[in-house]
Length: 542
Image (cartoon, rainbow, N blue to C red; front, side, top):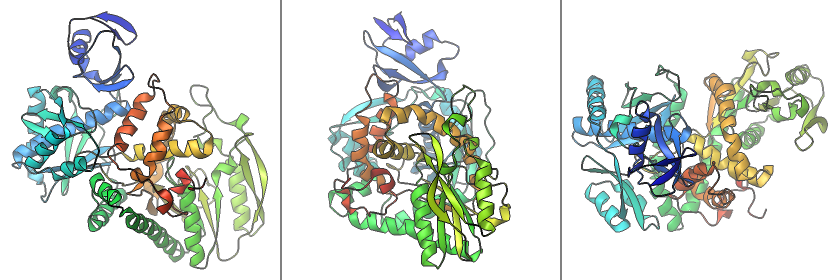
C-alpha cells in the first residue's frame, strides 16, 4: 500500500496510523498526537487506505493539546473511579492552564492526591489501547442508560443523530468529543494538585518548556463557581438542557433571564465605580469578548445612576497604518501596544482631566489613517470616562495617569456551558466562533482570513492581555449560556467558505463538531436588540 505521509510517498504494510508512526519515528513517536487525513482530522487509531494523504499533527498545537488534555483527563477519571469505587468525575474548566476536575457529590481528600497520581502512572505504564467504536444511536443510548450516564443519554436523545462514537477503555465506555491518543503511554509529564473540593491536572502546554508551577488566580475560579450555582438554579447544566428548551419552544424565557443576569453584573459594576469615586474606567478583554457592547451598556448603567459617561475606544488612537510597528517576522503587528499613539491618548486624557474640551480622533480602517472626528467632549463633575481596548489594563497605555485614579475592568467569555460532564468548550473556541460570525458580518473578512489570523491574535493575547487580567477591580463574564444555539446557524454558513482541501479546515471541523451538539435557535428575533450577541450576529432585519 502507498500513502503520502508529510508530503513524501511511503510504501507500507501496516494497517493503523500509529503503527506507521512508531516504525518511522521510533525515538519520538509520542510527539505526534493526531493527523490530518484527506482534509479531515483523525486519531492515530485510524485505519489507513491506499493513496491517503496524511499530515501528522505534533504536540502543542491547539487541537493536539485538546486531545492530550482529554486523554490525561480520561486516565485521571479511571484512577479516581478505582480509588473511590466508581464515583462520577466531572471535567469542568481551565484554571491558569490547569484542568479542574471534581467528583459528583463528593470531596476529594488531600491525603489521596498521591494515590491518584500513583494510579495514573500505573495506568500510563500499562500502555493500554484507547479504542473508538461507532454505535447506532439506539445502542449508544442503551449503554449510557445502563451506566447511569444520564447527561450523555439526555444529550444524545436531544440530537438527530444516527451514529455516535464511544471510546471502549478497559471494559468501560466513555464519550469524548475530542479525539484521544491511541494508547495510555502517550501521556508523559504531569502533576496532580489538590484544589478543594476537586483537583487540578497540570501538564506541559508548549514545546521546550518544563511543567509550570501553578499560580492561583483567585477571582476567575470564583466567577466559575458563581456561574455554576446560577445555572444549577435554572436547571441548565449541559447542552441537553438547552436543547430541550429549544425543542419545546421554551428558550425565550431563558434568553431574557440570561440578558438580565449580564446587565445585573454591569449595574453592580457601575455602583462600585461610583462608591469608589472613580472618574476614569479602563475596560479590557481579549478578541470577541464583547468589549464594545459592555462599554456602551456600562455607560447606560452609570447614566441611570446620574453620571455622564463617555466611551473612548483606543482603536481610534491607532497610528497611521504605514507607521504600525513590525513583529519579528517583519509583518505589521496590530496587536502591539505600540500600534497605538500613546502620547496623543495620554495628552487628551490629561486635557480632559484638567477641564479642557477635546476633539476625539477617529480611525479610518479602510484608508488606514487617523483623523479628527466631530465628537467633542468636556468633563464635568459628574463625568466618567470609559477607556475601552485590548490594552486598557496595561499601565503603559495610560502611564501619564496615576494608577490610583483608574478603575480597571476585565471582560471576557469566562464561563459558558459544557457539552456534558466530560466535554468542555474552551472560552477561546467560543470567542473564535463569535469572531468568525462578526468578521463576516461587519469586517469584510471571510472565514479563511479569520482563521489565518487567529494564531497571531492568540499570541497577542498571551503577550499583551492575559498578563494584566489579575489587575482588574471587577470582572465581567460576557458569556451567554444559550449562545451556541443562537450562533449555530450563522456560523455554519460561514464555515461553508472554507474548502476541505484548506490546511485550516481542521479548525472548521472542530468548531462544527462543537455546534453539532446544540439544537439551533431558528427565530433569533427573541434575542434583545441590545444584547451583547448583537455585536456579532447583527440585527435580524440586516
